[in-house]
Length: 109
Length: 88
Image 1 (tube, each protein chain N blue to C red):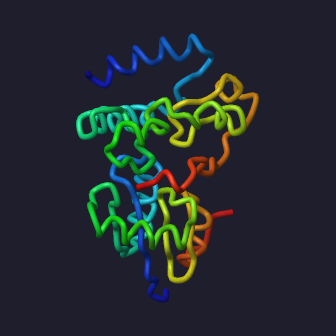
Image 2 (cartoon, each protein chain N blue to C red):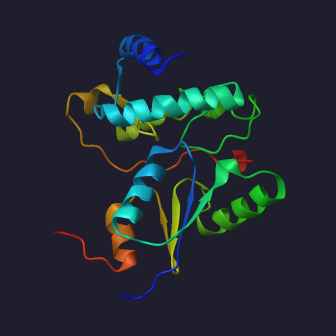
């Protein structure tokens, strides 16, 4: 899938849920390209900012959108990678901040 | 400027890792670069064990500057550890 197509498809499906792409479009495209690359090398869109092990089941929690996106959007207004942001951050109601890793280290192989 | 021993543990696809790489290059820092997603088997296990010792969450980027470990792309802290003055 081309990055532009992925961008358009995700923008539509995520905005319907009140989740937006980061306003830094360069960052968004860099991350979408990384997702496409991970799809090619692992067979699924593993989070570009985490170490995937190549096993779809074991990496299920970090397959984008990851399991940690919802709590990170809630607490920090953005996901760990910065690809997605909450409505509050999108509307400049909150400020962006550093997001610590939430994934338990025992899940890393 | 004293010579720093700097190591960047990163992932090839991670945006925060790329930002960290850019920062180190901008600051003309010589550093060892370890792309962990490209490692396999025992080599990967050994590096992961090293990272977990410094950063129990084992997240990326992890930067080691001499004895200081910085987790994440934290520009001010990285520059401080390198002995570079931050603009106020």
